[in-house]
Image 1: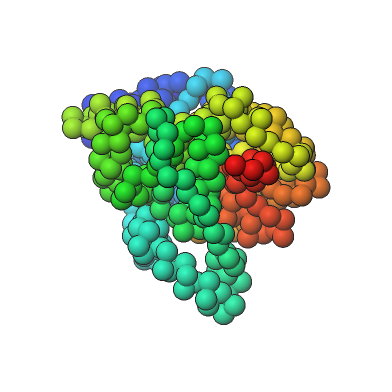
Image 2 (image 1 turned 90 degrees about the vertical axis):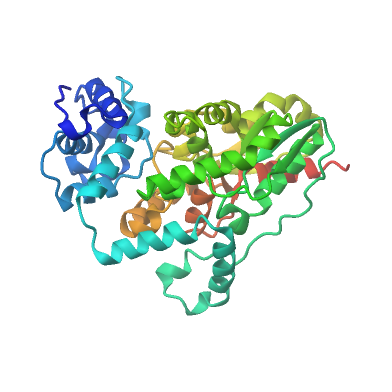
Length: 411
């Protein structure tokens, strides 16, 4: 695709990156076939190809309208289009650049600005989110149905977290909302790894990975969150932690991109690259160590439907690994039609675009339930909470389901 970027951005790092990405796009349209919002709405501007043209126009200095912002807002950033694209267009990176520009040059309605600001201030801060979640659970029966379904009726207990006792150590990210919504996830991962000789530790004060604010277009504040997390992790890395283990694939895809996002920061570029290089999704860690887990497994695990989060299969390009682990662990995987499509969670998307998110959730739950599983498992906290709000089937992280099978063998 030919480009003629405007003077204000042409020779900037963002301009050069955007130009290189745009030139890869050959306008083939393969991406539209796997774009969830295009499949729902049938509007070219609500598909990757149309959004690329809207961003190209903005980068070339054309007038930017509120309509452009609406179409970019509707994008889930699921990156299914990247998996489909035969030309290797890095759509997600282009979208970050385009959204930032459009945000700077348009004015959102007041209600949207307030909502986005509240999300950016509350969700990344555990000391604010945790008490608000407890309050929400208390008043849940009094809330409107659309709001009540976003508040879980109960929160599982984390259970025992093993004391660090092994020579091999890995770091876990407590994150922002996961530690309050599902504290059992990291604890289950810690117990499984402990059984095979790896101590999983959480760095004190290590909070949000930065994805939430960055994708709400508070990009500089998101980068500050990333730097703060690097500072918390770095002493542990210097002390010999061999990997950073992600149990939330949405955080994982962002941390794996720290090296790119902070590449122009002279203080953090090298550290960010190191962080990205040693970050692993929990499925990658378990896959490498499964031979040591297999003797610990008990009886078969029953029928499960696995939902691969977009951040895992498209963002991190990890496909089939968790499914293979579940089968090896004795679970029977039920078929899930259109497993490549997004469930509609997408970070804060389900809050900001509730109608589209609800339609995507209903479609996904119908696909997951079609094989009559006993439970649904996934790999990202946002997907888990979003899907659980629409089904009576238990929806859990797959590492929790795996750890229950490991527990069947006594210590």
